[in-house]
Each structure stands twice: as structure tokens, then as C-alpha cells.
Length: 104
Image (tube, rainbow, N blue to C red; front, side):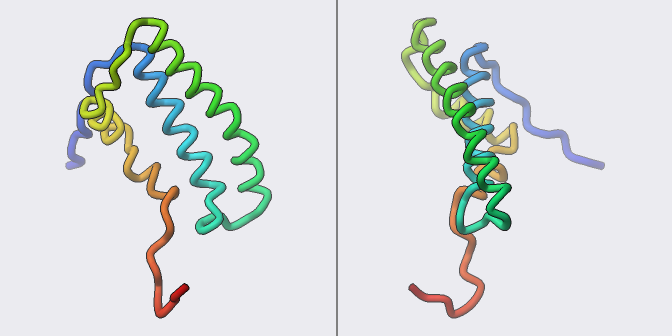
């Protein structure tokens, strides 16, 4: 039996847009990560799409600010990110673990 995924906490519409656009930007930036990319064309396409993701992220935060949502409720948003598989999706932003005696 597959365990039930964690429930998404209650969010405002703007907070949901904030999380969605953040994860979209993270996905695209992860595909362009030089330590993990495999093809230049795929990295290029991701970098080009990143501009649109950054605009969506900016717009979501602007909407929050204009709606009077001046505080970012980090703990709640972190729970939502985990429910949306944010840990796996942001993992590509990091350097891969060393596989041997590689030293800089």
C-alpha cells in the first residue's frame, strides 16, 4: 500500500503562486546547473525559460505584497514545499556528491 502524501497546508492564492513559480524556477535552474547538466541545448532551453519563471515569481511576490501579505510564513510554506516534492526538485541545484578521490 502506498502511503498517503502529506497534506498541503491552507495557503492564500498568492502564496500558492509563490510556491509554484519558485519550484518552476528551481526546476529550470537545476536543469541548467553546470555540475549536473548533460547537454548544452537542454541547459540553454532551461536558462531561456528561467526568465519567465523569474517574472512569475516576482509577480506572485508583488501580488502578496499588494494584498497586504507582508509576512512570509516560512514554516507553513516549507511544509507546503515538502508536500509538493520540493526537496527532490531542489536537489539538482546542489553539487553532486564526490564519487571518488576528486579534489579541488
